[in-house]
Length: 188
Ligand code: SF4
Ligand code: SF4
Image (cartoon, rainbow, N blue to C red; front, side):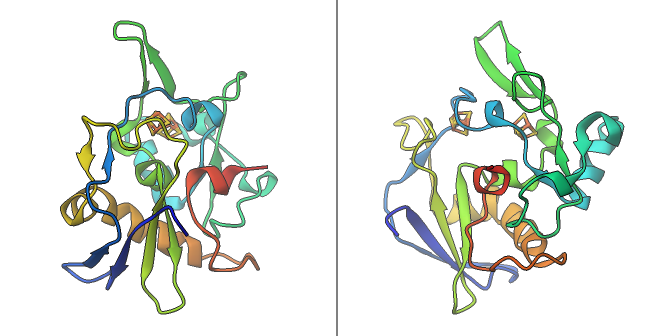
């Protein structure tokens, strides 16, 4: 696959071993919300729901039943984020001061949101392949952060671990090797 950035070995180890496939790959979220949060929210794991509740939100405000969604990728889904009437995530806000979008639960956002615009695939050898979703407008932004070993270890590894855990829990009969990312997990 051409959109793969890295292979992560020993994901659960204290210091994950990361083999980069791409040098100089950059990413910066420009908060356009054009291909993520405006297309609806993600499925939610139990820990996602707990984090958002800690921010003071009642679960009935933001979560609906996961059974009506095709959450086959995310076996451990306990719910699905509610959408607004326009189809955007219930927590998406437009900041009119700087003309960009923001997440109103950014510190507690779900793990699939933390992972976006990247996705993971569990390889047959047990390692995890990390890819990117090319339509995200922050991909290869010249002012972006380099997505290297340090970036992956600092910003992505915790979400990757949590998403992996939730991919493999639950009772769905879905295949394990489907890529996991927000878009796939919520697509109709
Ligand atoms: S993740 Fe990508 S598509 Fe979503 S707001 Fe950021 S730059 Fe835009
Ligand atoms: S929780 Fe935040 S980051 Fe996730 S879809 Fe909603 S607005 Fe976007």
